[in-house]
Length: 348
Image (cartoon, rainbow, N blue to C red):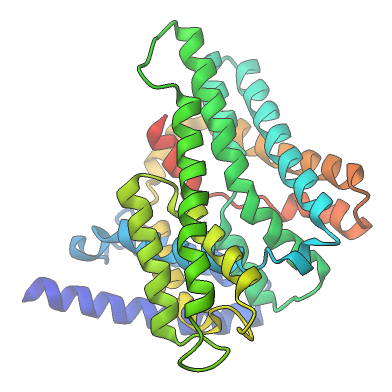
């Protein structure tokens, strides 16, 4: 009973914090994501230690739910009409930003004495971005122009390239170490991405025609959350990327649900509570002692990753003849990194 009361009190307090944070964010230059992370650090175990274990132990499922909703909404941006004029920019910038970042981070770490194996893996991990953080900043800014639409489309593809690079990196490191494995890492990653794409399409196609019939043209909240969480659960059960599954499903529904005014519009009002809890717990889980220990490696990683994202996006923008605004700012907009990178680090 006491654990239940602690859970509910903590949940209520964090959700109310979201309202305060949104208000402060609108009146300052800081995005609410940053404020939530800082508050999480403050109430985390390294400072006030106010979050009970009964709540923090559920961080993984909360994070998965937040990423699923964000993944679906990002996929919804990948419509044929929106990509018709920007497809070349989305592909060039997303691929270039991922590859250049991986190369620069790997080389930078090797220069300061990090082993080739570790440097290659960290370089591949560095190519990933944080879809949840980027999506929320775009939404909070209320910017609906060409740049924000292009950014969200790039983010939707970015982590797929990161997973492919990570598979290649693991294969290279395995070859350097002279280790033999029963299953090729490339095959494993291909199954992860290919299976996710297939699953997202298999769920998305019938959902595109079935949903939005009760309230014509606008799926109700139970439909939206139900289909998103089912897709995530099945993806986890089949051991494929649930984030890519939800993105593909969102893209399929957005392109094939002709009777929808807007695909799963209801879910846009429900993802914020998950995001609040996600970012607060992310901040609370930060171990400052571990940050101190990484020292020069951490500084070089951060610097090289920022440089790689900027130069990669710059190169991709020039190759695709993007606007000056995109060329100048896209690399900076791709700097956030979180969930997918952590998952790859655990595998590494």
